[in-house]
Image (cartoon, rainbow, N blue to C red):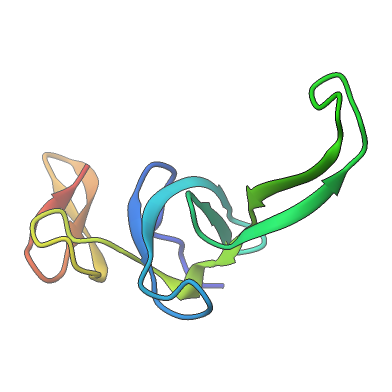
Length: 105
């Protein structure tokens, strides 16, 4: 299993699929299933029964998970997709964008 370099709150771009080219913020990452939920990407319509939260019930649109291999982290400097490498700075591991050598958060 490969290491997941994408974390909650990262800005990513979709590389393949119906939403190719869309950008959004990562809302959640499932490390076991290798999937992430990205804001505004892979929207599905889900039928719900009436509950206290949705007294009307009906159809609700929400984001569905997308596989990690289909998204790429955005470079903080240029805003384009980039790969990541891990470096040690001041004794801590930090993520660095390969294209611009910028530290990511």
